[in-house]
Structure formats: structure tokens, C-alpha cells
Length: 368
Ligand SMILES: Nc1ncnc2c1ncn2[C@@H]1O[C@H](COP(=O)(O)OP(=O)(O)OP(=O)(O)O)[C@@H](O)[C@H]1O
Ligand SMILES: [Mg+2]
Image 1: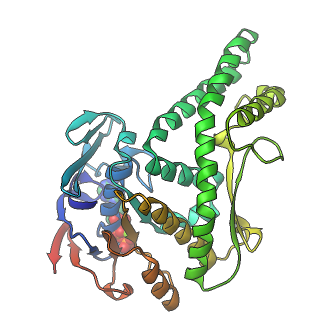
Image 2: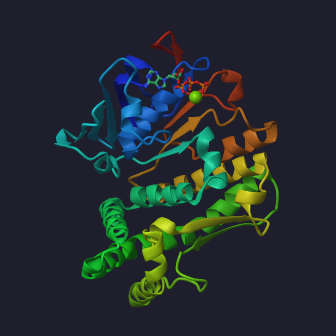
């Protein structure tokens, strides 16, 4: 699978631009602020249906314009694939998957595998639990696009349940029971997917972290549920029973808090480095190495799917690493696939690329 062409209109700093990509390593070279990360962001939006650095699609509209369009042409073997997304300042969205129109950006996921390594990834280790939840959910959806719908549904039911708890009215007792059941129904596939994914990630994250850092400190990942101190059952009826029991136990607390206090939206992925929570104790360098290991592990899992070797988006990842880590990362990057790298300096890259694009004054110039 490879990206052939990316076309942007009024996306971030780009008025109108087109890039014809090589099937190997593509370098986007240009000074700070020249729009390199914006190009990677557009690719990410087309492939995954969300921006890695902005919550609202409206932020992606070029200042002064009223609507962005990003269109990506790719191929899966001989079969062409086209993914397009647009949004205007009023938040009206449109998507196209091989010409078929739709509204939800989430329908873009599952056609083109992409893994991005971004400077902001440090937050996956350092930031709040919602970031690690979204790391797990985004990867789960890429691995199995059937999870996109339950995720949306779950968020909708929690919102409704919170509104019901806020009203705090006795007449809503029955309504709350119905919403409890709906919420648990939607939560189960999400929890199963997250717990399975964490189990699959433990080994590659630990191995890749070791290979990158050259250190022997242990790395471990745990899924911590918001369901009491005992381990969460992995499947089926036992999992359902636990969720129901938790709902009963928290009834009063939820009424006072006027919000849903258990469920996948309250859970946590804990990352332990040398037995301690990395969020609190990892140094800057260790945090960076862990974040890269999480991303490279995602790429490994996606690459297991023979039709979906991921396209790599590497946003200036080498600049912050010392010499030996740079070399080690270069060796660990999956070979043979397509990648887009950006950097202000060619010298930061520890390997040769297949095509270089110079970004200057709002335009892209290709050099070979
Ligand atoms: N909605 C927008 N409309 C117009 N310009 C924007 C918008 N959002 C961001 N920008 C601008 O885009 C410019 C380029 O951003 P980008 O992050 O792509 O640069 P970069 O080449 O990756 O730089 P660096 O090397 O510093 O990472 C920034 O100067 C920013 O102000
Ligand atoms: Mg950048």
C-alpha cells in the first residue's frame, strides 16, 4: 500500500499544493514554519480521520479561507484508493472514500494504515490518561475498523447517561437503568479490544524500548480499569457481571458527582519503567524513547496484516535523539515500506532518502 499523491486546498498554511510521492522514503525539507508538519497532518487526517494535534477540524482551515480540502490518492497493489476530507468554518464535514460521499471523518479509517511519530507523542507517556486511551483506541480502530462504530456509540450513551444523572430526577430511575444496560453493552467490545491490544503490545514495546535505548530497564504495560481493585475479567459474562456490580456500587457516588464514574472512558493504561510509573518518573530522554517504542510497536502490529504495511510519518524525530539513538532508530524502522519524513536539516537524517521535496515560500519543489 502506498500514497501516490496528496492534494491540499486551504489546509493550515497551504493555499493549494500537490505532492507526488515516491514509494520509498520521502523527505520534506524546509525551515521552521514552512509547513512540513502540516503536510504530515493532512496525510494523517485522510488516513485516520483525525488530526494528531488538533481536536477541532475547523482549526485546519487556512486562516482567511472558509473550507479546507485534503485529497489523497493511494494504491493497494494494483487497486487505486482515494480518500478525501473537507470541513468548513461552520463545522460542515464531507468525506469521500473511492468517490462514495459521507459525512463522518471516522469512516476514513481502515483503508490506509498510517503510523506517525510526532514530537507531541511525549504526551502519550507524560500526559493524562485520556491520551493513552486515545492511543489504544486509534490503534484498535486501525487494526479493526469495526470498532469505530461501538466507540462512537459508547461516547453517545455516556453523554446521555451523564445528562440523566445531572437531572437527578426520580422519574429518571428507569431511564438510567436502560442507559446502564446500553452502556455496558457498548463497553464490552471496547474493553475486550483494549485488553487484547495491551497484551499484544507488552512484548514489542519492551523489546523496542530496549533496542532503542540500549538499556536493560524493564518496561511493562497494564490496563487499569475503573472497576475496583481486582483484575478485570477478560471476557463475556464475567466482564458483564463486573460492570453491572460496579454500576450498583457507584450508584450513590454517581448521583452526587452527576457523572459516569466507571467504564472505558475512565480507564488507564499504565506504563511502568523499571517498575515505576513512567508518567511520574521517566526522564525526558526515557519518555521520548518510550513514546517512540509505543509507535514502533503500533507499526509492528499493523505490519502483521499483509495487506496493510503502514505508511510511516516521521515528524522531525531524529533531531532530538543523540547519535547512537539516531542510528538505532534508523535500524529499527520497518524497511521496504513508504515513509514521509520531515526535517529542517538533511544532516539530521541517518540514511539516504528516495525523494526530497523542498518547502519554500508556500510552494513545494521536488529534487531527486
Ligand atoms: N489554520 C492555519 N492557517 C494558516 N496557517 C496556519 C494554520 N495553522 C497553523 N498555521 C501555520 O503553519 C505554519 C507551519 O506550520 P508547520 O507546523 O507545518 O511548520 P514546520 O515546517 O513543521 O515547522 P517546524 O520545523 O518548526 O516543525 C506555522 O507558522 C503556523 O502558524
Ligand atoms: Mg514541524
